[in-house]
Length: 279
Image (cartoon, rainbow, N blue to C red; front, side, top):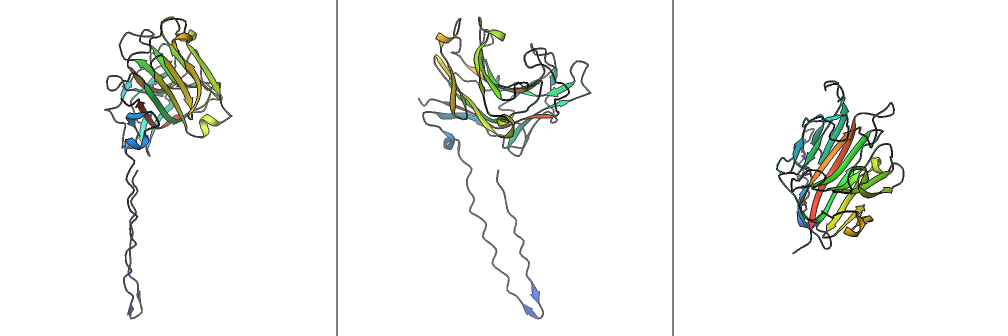
């Protein structure tokens, strides 16, 4: 974000002696914003990114999922596209899960879910986001991908880069779902981190996805890897997938908010970036 300084110079008159007007203080030399190439990593070239540095969500990058039908998990939120639930502020994407008495009975919370479906999809690459997570019983943030080949779930495949459930405040989950290993039978792991880590600061959640291998990273430390030999049925992660970001409230896996849950809750996203191997 550019910051401009306004200097106000006021001549002072002392008695009958006119003081000379001081020279304006030179403005600092502008520092150019980094080009996307500056974010390239060793062995990876950036091919897409959203830094959330505009006045609002870039609709050339993201679509919305809308509604409150439980989303296949008996969730309690309704997703909206309203600024109370999703906005760009000070260079960050903010998804807000909040109590909302205006919603129909059984959907007492509102939140947001955005996706690159129909706009951007990738086959293989490093996909990462720098985020600070919400917390609390029944709160369920996720950064994940679904197959773009429109075969339905789980036939298209699902890659969960990051899932977190509030009743396990110091764990993050990495999982894949496909025919033969979906839902509660998904193949994955969890990583335990020090208390407060996920809520107190930003961290980078990433996968490096290549042919016949997916690796998961937390702050650039690999903590899980999968290959076709590690799944009990067909490996279907060989086509384009799109990105999803959301905060769910409730569901069979995370459980539901209780008297300890504080609202509103915020998923704050600094950036989302996609890299691929140079050709």
